Image (cartoon, rainbow, N blue to C red; front, top):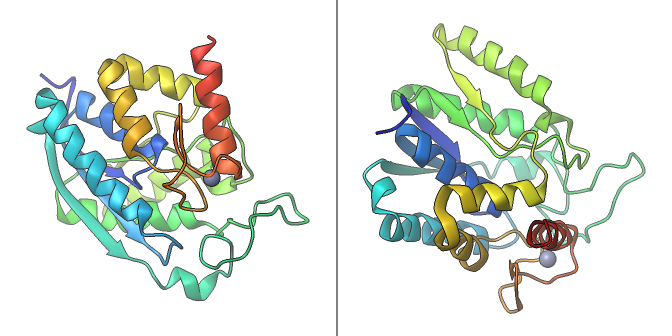
Amino acid sequence: MPSDPRRALVLFSGGQDSTVCLAYALDRYAHVETIGFDYAQRHSVELESRLHVRSHLHEEFPRWAERLGDDHLLDLSLLGQISDTALTSERAIERNAGGLPNTFVPVRNLLFFTFAASVADRRSLEVLIGGMCETDYSGYPDCRDNTLKSLQVAISLGLDKPMTIDTPLMWLDKADTWAMAERLGGEALIELVIEHTHSCYLGDREHRHAWGWGCGLCPSCDLRRKGYDAWLNS
Ligand code: ZN
């Protein structure tokens, strides 16, 4: 039996963090749907990873399969009109003068949660779950705990009913996230995360490392490798 009878919607990109969030949600909530956003990412790899991860979770974890509901994919290509950054163009990944990575799309996560809330209301879902993390602070103020707590209040007021924003990774580091995956789904979930999730900014699916697929050099691969090594050595 789930420990929480509510129905949840996971912001699911197909990456490591949102996959662990999806496992967390399936372990905890009675019914779980997923939502993804298509915003002219440079690589369709991420969108394919979403479907692979969902189908493998369904096949390999029967206790979760009956709770896993529909997937929703929203076209947010309009973000490309707003922001010319490394996420939406072929520009190299660099840090700008303000210290923010140029993958930064201003208030992107607030937009994602607000669109998710709109879908959640139509689907009678009461909890929004995202893999935002303040511990590995990477320059994204829209990922901070206070930002998302205030958004939870704004969305709940705007809907005139409670909408919970649950961020299970908020105070974990990357090693903790691997440990959480192991606790939730054992070796099978670790293998699924390594083989099927995608984090690399360059969309590299040619180089396989102990920690998964990726170029091994970009900031996202670097973070993933360091977290994996720290978890193994913990
Ligand atoms: Zn990479």
